[in-house]
Amino acid sequence: MRTSALLSLALGTVSVLGGPITSRSTYSVKGSHPVPEGWRQVQRAPADHIMELRIGLTQGDFAGLEKYLTQSSNPNHPQYGKHLLIDDVHNFIKPSKESSDAVHAWLYENGILAEDIDYTPAKDWIKVKMSVADVEDLLDTKYHTYRSDDGRTAVRTPEWSLPRHLHDHVSTIQPTNSFFGPRTQARMDRRKTEAIADMEDIAEYLPPPPDAATVDAVCNTTWVTPLCLRTLYGTVDYTVQAADKNTMAMNDFLGEVSLRSDTELYLQSFRPEALAAAQEFTQISINGGTVQQTPLNETQLEAQTGIEGNLDDQTMIGVAWPTPLVIYSTGGSPPYIPDLTTPENTNEPYLVWLEYVLSLPDPLPSVISTSYDDDEQTVPKDYAIQVCNALAQLGARGTTVMFASGDAGVGTDGNCYTNDGRNASTFLPNFPSTCPYVTSTGGTMSFNPEVPVFRNRTSGLYTGGGGFSYYFDTPDYQKAAVQSYLAKTGVAEKYAGLFRPDGRAYPDLSGQSLNYTIYWNGTLRPVSGTSASTPAVSGILALVNDALIAAGKPTLGFLNPLLYGGLAQAFNDITTGSNYGCGTEGFPAVEGWDAATGVGTPNFKQILALLGVGEKDGNWGSW
Ligand SMILES: *[C@@H]1O[C@H](CO)[C@@H](O)[C@H](O)[C@H]1NC(C)=O
Ligand SMILES: *[C@@H]1O[C@H](CO)[C@@H](O)[C@H](O)[C@H]1NC(C)=O
Ligand SMILES: *[C@@H]1O[C@H](CO)[C@@H](O)[C@H](O)[C@H]1NC(C)=O
Ligand SMILES: *[C@@H]1O[C@H](CO)[C@@H](O)[C@H](O)[C@H]1NC(C)=O
Ligand SMILES: *[C@@H]1O[C@H](CO)[C@@H](O)[C@H](O)[C@H]1NC(C)=O
Ligand SMILES: *[C@@H]1O[C@H](CO)[C@@H](O)[C@H](O)[C@H]1NC(C)=O
Picture 1 (cartoon, rainbow, N blue to C red):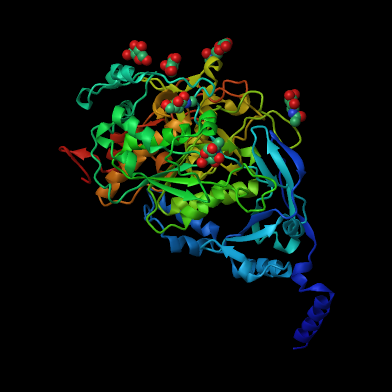
Picture 2 (cartoon, protein in one colour; picture 1 turned 135 degrees about the vertical axis):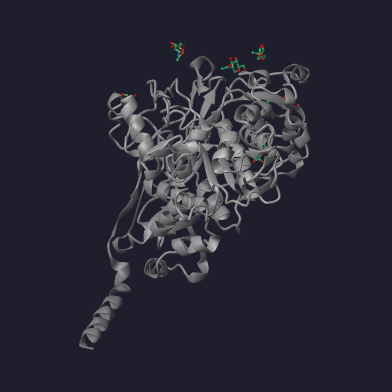
């Protein structure tokens, strides 16, 4: 009892001095990250600018979720395929009472009341709208307006602090030091945008009907169509069986749009039986994301807005019709207008999108395709971990999360330096491909055999992204494959100091990614990029899920453990070439998994056969 009395006396004294003891621990730096290349400080941020601060609380049992995911995605584990429901996920990730209390006490002491606060459903993120001046006090920092070389503006600070006693309770706070503006990976010879054919010319190149289909008959390297992809990867004679129980999804960020009028022209030319799908795909606007069906305006035509969005939706429908497609259009990227005192456009688009999709009821789309990526080193590590953990939640709920591996091989020539003050030479891995919970898609070209994509600089240098993370370790599921690759190729010695051989390695798989023919602004265009391979392979995986659902089996969910655990056999191995970049040849493609093309490109029929849902006696399904 005496102890207790003494304690309250002590607390009483402290509170006279200025609040409960917890709030008074000294501040120290919690997050610090250099401003990425291409962004420069313009001026102090206006003190009354309102931003929506997102405080990521340490998740109560992410390790438990991770362990569950490891089991439910491991084909040899009894839990395999037992995807979690939304409430199960929330139980794992909701912060501990201790973390929640500590953070709320601190906010309260800073004048932030309960009614000012919003939460994500699991309460692992706290959202509060505050002026720049108040955030500066709260995080002991100074915000500035920054402008990027390509004209984007953001209010950010490279360094922020927290009272020491909160460091373990808070994982990240944004917007602070993340300048993450995911880049689209579509390459269209950006300055050479002439249409590739007049309408009349199309007939000349249109491939023969499916019953005549061999790869030689329907594939041409200057002219990659859905029929070519479906023939090459073996889905052409598959009939979708579970369109009422399966959906696939894709993301539009950065003002990208997917236009029904162009999709209609595309399907008319390349998959007429799917024509109605152009009017049927679902578009969801998140945080003011652009959902547009009017003609592109001058600004958009100049910026070639819609190339990426059109490529993604046309390819997914072209491959996986009649599986329904959902398109998420998320706003929240710059431009931000410095004198506007609204909270719009300061948010991180990935966090906003993840919050939306993770709060959707079950079942989620079985596959989500994303053709955006950014240099890992430009992304603060705490933020990258939080985004990656959210992507793991999607996997745990049975969604296969697909990302493009990037279009600059091991890094864009001339940019391959660290941003940590050393300016040392390095390869430049791409995030979120480096997150171990996504499936990263690289690029190939040519047929019989397919090789790693390579377009030389005269037409705009383009090679498929691949490499090793500095932030995330090699996950167990790929350790054997990666170690064998390192031993076989000697790249750790050849490129010593340029990458971290014990990092998460990508891509995981790949697909055709050169000279897709899509419609944009009413005319046919050639488009290349891992932006093309990602929706193509995503469409094929949506069809694999269709066969699984029809057979009463669980969907693929987080694919990588299954892929490296045996499904790789059902992929066409790419064994020559490499992914040039950073003035080097990059990583060579060799037998087995490699850091240029992953395990290779999908063979749909072999995948179904290995999963026990292949064709037998003319029927598809379980046998
Ligand atoms: C591929 O298409 C081009 C036209 O873009 C044509 O000139 C060429 O002959 C075709 N190649 C083959 C092998 O059919
Ligand atoms: C891709 O198409 C362009 C024409 O748009 C052609 O010049 C180029 O040779 C093609 N690439 C390959 C590998 O065939
Ligand atoms: C073009 O459309 C975009 C998207 O709706 C809009 O933000 C922009 O202001 C428009 N530009 C012009 C010049 O109309
Ligand atoms: C880093 O080094 C390269 C090569 O010496 C140089 O071109 C570049 O300007 C340097 N960058 C910085 C930020 O110092
Ligand atoms: C790319 O083109 C350059 C000349 O512009 C040539 O020196 C180089 O060998 C070419 N690279 C490959 C891999 O073909
Ligand atoms: C877009 O289409 C319109 C209408 O056909 C045309 O006038 C315009 O030149 C096109 N712009 C581009 C960049 O293709």
